[in-house]
Image 1 (cartoon, rainbow, N blue to C red):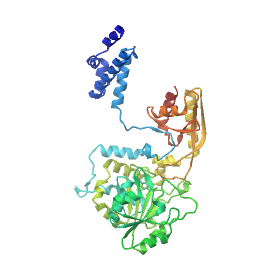
Image 2: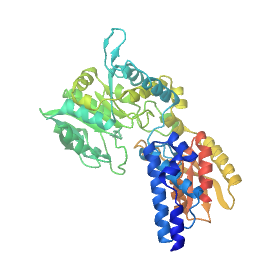
Image 3: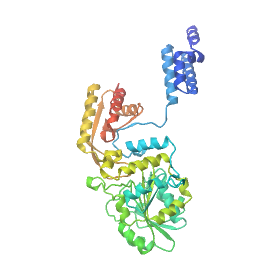
Length: 463
Ligand SMILES: *Cc1c(COP(=O)(O)O)cnc(C)c1O
């Protein structure tokens, strides 16, 4: 009892700590509120520990380390960078696309200054924010007109609300997808005020299904990309060309929600089996929508390209204001799109494309390099490089396995689940995969600048 009393009486006061050199340094670095909270929490913990008999060491060193940990936790940002070792390039939970250098630089420049966001410099009067990416989008898609909004979900909602409010929209039953979260096509349709007219069956929809459904209240024929699933076996869907012809015959616009939307023809690389946006536009589709941060590799955004009459009508919808794009995004978008003017630039400079198109030899070399460093720094663990496959993610190429190389790590010391958890909770966090009792680092999404952090993180997790 006496001993506890003695210990309690030696606990420093909040004021003493604040006035110490360390306290002054904290106050210079962190918000005062967090410093106070850290000191109080640490002292409280100590007091409780002493009373309960679980704490006997109350040296300043330990107390100060404790305080610093609390302050750092309070002052840390919630949204932070991490290392994606899953190999999934367009990982929806991990921020989808990593932006290009030019895109980042432009965001920094434009948002760190005043800009002509809504100002026409030539005329010296008010301008429109949408004009900034119109020209370049027309250039890289071949469309008559273009508009960018907050994301593709907003783009779809906005198009439907502008063109089809109170009117019927024909959609195949094989394409009534749920993209994730609460984005389900029938629900989006309902929120937009459009009336869903389902045609065909789950596995087969024919051109006559569409044609039979057309009536005086039809406003739109909508095709939706089956982003995250495939129907295989006895199946049939109507081609874009057939839908465009049908639309012409009945003077009904055709819209295609491409979802991911790739600006390059990547079929030559053997991985992308979908038509490029340009092809869809050239086929005569009136309105095409796609994401900015999936295959395109830019910031979050929803692109609408198509015939001028429709784009103008959509732009005039008051709802456009509610889903408008901000200046940071616009700056990132314009710089990303500019890369696409020259196909080779896009492949080299847009990280999403680059990571997707990496050659197996490149991946193997990187995996070997990482494994070598790990072996040098960590003893008594099994580390080896092996071939595996990764996914594109982002609903981009659901059925495509991309050949990759991984570093497989097996430790006798801790369970693979514990290992994965420690990596995940590390600084920076490392998100990995588990396969048959081994921890898997898929190097497709590990950039050269991540390697130091990766090696340090793995070493820390295993010690
Ligand atoms: C991803 C996707 C969307 C939603 O796009 P966001 O940019 O995430 O809002 C809509 N439709 C399809 C077909 C998609 O694949």
